[in-house]
Length: 81
Picture 1: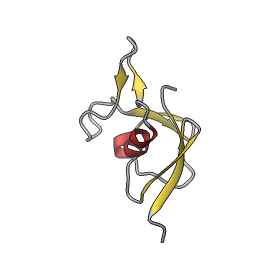
Picture 2 (picture 1 turned 90 degrees about the vertical axis):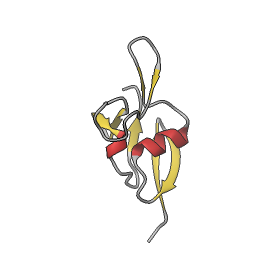
Picture 3 (picture 1 turned 180 degrees about the horizontal axis):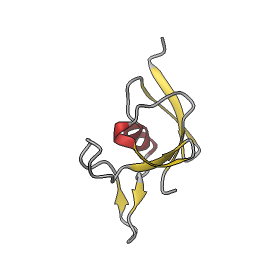
Picture 4 (picture 1 turned 60 degrees about the horizontal axis):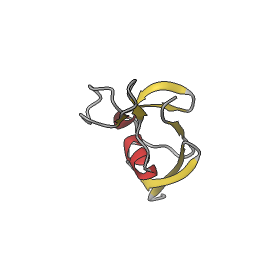
């Protein structure tokens, strides 16, 4: 069983430990999950899926909460979509 999961964040390959959330992969990639309407960077705030600040697109599905989604091999994560 592998001890890391590899996925892409905005086209960049990222590897994170098995069991990591997509929010972790986005942080490892060094980008914010999204930006506000005024251009401010946004990321996980509550870590419980309540605040929706960590929304990303995963495999073409928009507005997925990255703090509540476990990484799977080959996922295509996009921020600010």
